[in-house]
Length: 308
Image 1 (cartoon, rainbow, N blue to C red):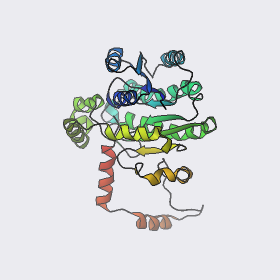
Image 2: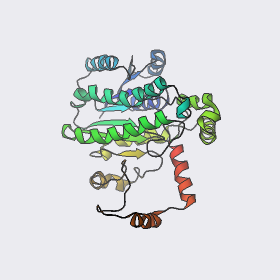
Image 3: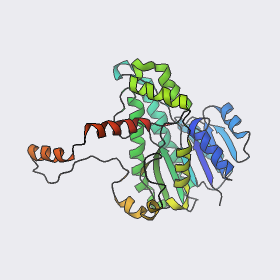
Image 4: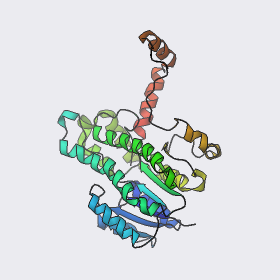
């Protein structure tokens, strides 16, 4: 059965890859981005891709886009929020405040406003799915990328909130951390240079772009989240590279996963009671303290799991 799918940020990167993949599979894709020429080039080889220019940071344009989609179909089965920007890059004192806030408008507000105005179309589907894109900084600190990191942490929390709000409307809401993919968004890091981006992130970016890391894992993870195998899964942030979503047992335990704090943003406080002493907390921390090597490995994995 073919799906009707809206994709934002579809002019390049993961959004474009998803549009091509879903259209090739016979789905109908309604693609938007700011750059109409790139969208038209994307659609030129696929009869199943319809395109329209839309800046997700502009609510008026989002309303017009949804009206355009509604003139072509009565319902939408999935909304994939792929639009995102990375800058400003650098320590907070050196960043431009308007640019910092604009990143939140695109990455977080853009996700919110697309969902808000897509709900009437999604309610027409028997099993609607919303997939938001998280990324580096959503789960661990991402110095020199504070706007991006804060926006992506916000996207994950928005995902969790709306999973509960929309459950009664049969709309599932999940987020995906796609892993490093060689796309134009990362050129901002090279342009910023190692002094502003930080040597580690600059090197990871340069190597990732040179290697041409593909969006294959992210595309396959989205396919899973759109499939019957993921029915009922909601309020979770899935790492395309590191989580066991490919294992058959994952689908058979969706109810248990939903009831747990797995794959969510939570405050870690492994003690209970209101009269806990500092010495008790420190004793507990000693039992939980990971090795330095393990901590370094986790940090590196998270950096490699940055978006788009």
